[in-house]
Length: 600
Image (cartoon, rainbow, N blue to C red; front, side, top):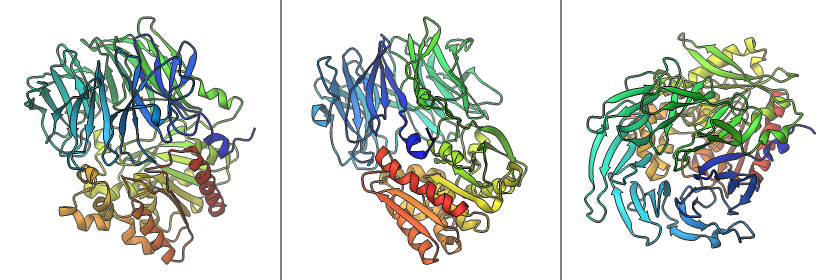
């Protein structure tokens, strides 16, 4: 069969959401066209939901029930419902089959944790801007506000005795986390809250988990790379358990506080291992099916409540996405799904790893996907975030581009995570255009990659869409075409019009409208739109709460005013990206045809 874009987009992918003490896994599966809940148990797959949009969920401990988080057409205003698992059910649950837990369609509700008979969630219903942390009884509906300190909330971890809650919230500096401790006193309305890590910290504090000696986190406090540390609950002092001098680590503590699952990131691939949580001692390497990336999505868990099992989401350049189950007692790791079987016999591209020299002596990490029969053209695919990274995982669009003869470069420009604190901080605020300059350095390297530099295009989504537009606007002589998906065209209007609950959070990264407006305007592609000469293809979701549709509309109007070819497609039932397969099947073949016309 031909490896075309339609077939690639129709591949089924899996991800792990939760796991029980008996090894049942609550998984997400997109076989129906959007991510729905499926239970994997004893070689049996049971479809649990058939909602109109993508869903996530968690098991309610001690019950055969799932707390389901769902939104409407990508608007990201999550609602929480309860699905009781009944073996007599003959079809997946629709919305009418779910018991409402927290329903208020005008506001956001995000599931943070589940406890026996209780759920913990964040909501902005108080004023539409600030998120409160609420503990709700799943039986009586009684609620207790744990935190109402304003701003966004990242994670909450409640200790096994339900006396203390660790709450992480964005700190004042980009990609930094404040850690708060709340002593839970239900019914008094007076939870005692204190800082463990202050607001002015310049360090990450992720994945909090409790053990007798304190709070275990992933952090880069005082370090270039993230490691695993225990925080003294009185002083906040870091005691390092697992570190690396050259690689970022991510850790998850088991619920019993005895074992750490640690992922070491090496050039976009993970090496998982188990460590003793008290001493940090290495216990066991976990063998993966091949070299790839273990999705460790927050705040989704990996451990079963009794700490026997850990579920991982795994993907590689040739495996669309699978669930792996680690059995700690048996010291084994087994795939519960095998998505690569859908591509048996196909010649898929594996990336080579490169460091591209930059103008200032720095090295830009980059993956290169090379076609068997290259046509001399190239596509640079830039990730979103910007606090994110491109990794060695499956990307159907990359494989489709390579199959069409394009060499695909996937860089991690300045501001990307995974390569240390210095690199991810190098684009903050007034250094924004430093990451754009990395595009010019990558372009200069194209001949060494066997590419005609006059036939190079940019492709990116979200912040990657900003990079596409910035490359076309600030470097018009370099790029032959651009594909912008839900991208920012003006940093000023983006900050003015993004959802109110996101504005302060994004100003940490990009700069403040109050103090940095002139620079934000200078760094905006819209300001230089008159320079854009390359054809442009724009995709956007009408319900995008992050990057409003107006960002696309204004750049399209400006580029068309230059008498430059510009295709524009808006999807009324999508938000920040295309979550529905039917829309992806419509949009992406058009985008690839656009590239073929302008890189031919």
